Image (tube, rainbow, N blue to C red; front, top):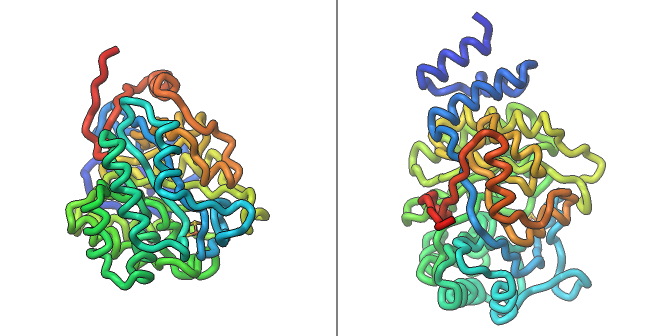
Length: 360
Ligand code: SF4
């Protein structure tokens, strides 16, 4: 029996794959066979249903005291020409100009700004809850929560409770990068480490908050380090069951200090999606984030294990500053068309995967 055949038998028997299986899937020459196996798992879990949502991205400050080599968005100090920090009423105006009735989510991710008081963050959330009560607030990566805890002298639980009281609904999955210490030391040495990232999500799950998880791929990590990253996410999910979706994030190489590295190809992208569907047997959804993958690769990824394509996004900054060629936003009709053209069934969802039906 070939090694892939052996893995197929395990998948059919719903047996957990080992790290060695994951490494084999990453290196097996027949990508289409790996993708087909992942697609069969996706069909078993979700049928042809493919999720998307109607959301808005806000980055209220790009000032950041960390120095991640792959970042093209922040690493700026207050006062530098491109640096900005929205005051609460600036943020309100910014959202009001882009908000449309029917939108269900605001996604907020910021730099680690050393010049703001902690109260800035709950005030921002309270303003959104007051002015735009229809929006679920998915805000602040685990890296930000860890930074708040250290800077303002609180535990993760205290930070999360204060934000929850102000309107926080769930956590996005960013900042995980690759958990391997060898890689973190080189590409993101001055922010939360792997245990701290996982610790924030554990604390959030224990408070009843759902969260997402990610993996940055295509920098200097090895196949073993990708599999180890997935193994650690899977272990936390066994414990808390709080992750909703895994989102692989492709490295982009413009405007940052890793410009000499080639960006991942479509083949790399599709393989990461497929292997993550097979390895992460306890995380319900796998997202093909169209902003990172480009619209056409994201659509293809829906046939390689992914069952979510993210949302309208409405003005994405972080990856466009790193050279993403995808449009700044898609409308609902475009998203539905992409899904239908792949022979799949579009389903709008809330942030927490409740289905939304709208009158045609
Ligand atoms: S990736 Fe995040 S933490 Fe790192 S420099 Fe950019 S904004 Fe700051």
